[in-house]
Length: 145
Image (tube, rainbow, N blue to C red; front, top):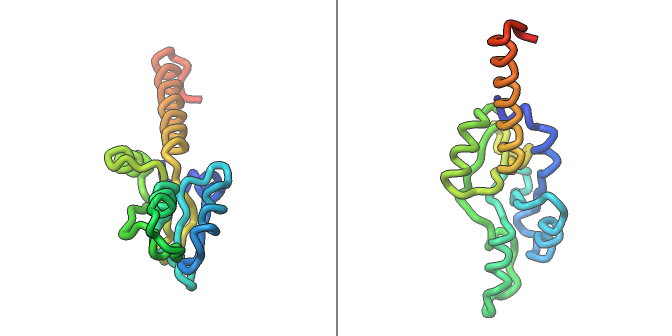
């Protein structure tokens, strides 16, 4: 299964913010349900980095930190995937690195979605259930349906 098959889910989780935005604007984006990661973009909408809730909390917890732009708080370099990547491979990478969310970037480095590890697990589980049902039908003599 390819990431692009989850486009409905990944595009619904996409949140982008300009690199010059304030942490307050980022907090507003991250406060929306289902949003765990914001993709920080340049003016040309190419991804420059990512900002997580943890990045924002670290900034707010620093007593000496002045009001900064999102560009100063974002993580870079960052891990991402493409719509053509294999879902199982991306899930393994996310699991190995302890990532909850990964941006999905087009070939032009423009964000097209955010893959949440829960969505990946659900899709992989459903795929395995289908394979199990097909195998059961085959063994039972029903054949493929």
